[in-house]
Image 1: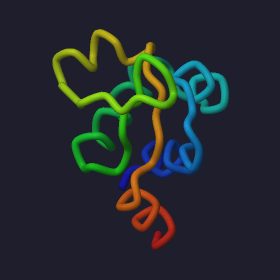
Image 2: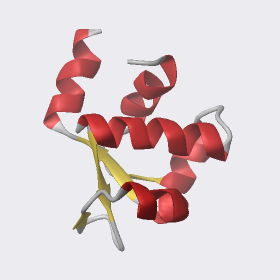
Image 3: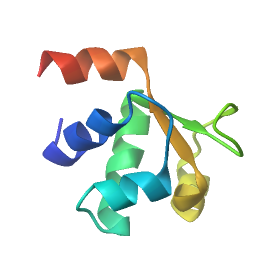
Length: 85
């Protein structure tokens, strides 16, 4: 797990919007979206869209275009990995 991925998981114990992640973490949009995509591919986080209560399927092509519109939450697998580092 990269340092950026670890920092993101640190923020996703509760549902968090992209905008809140961006304002909290010192990453630009490209870095943040890339790290989020990596965490999604590993199954460590999930997307919620169009609201914080509706889970949305991950599609890599769609994700890069809409990354800034989503909410995110760590999965159980993501929390286990995060807490074991």
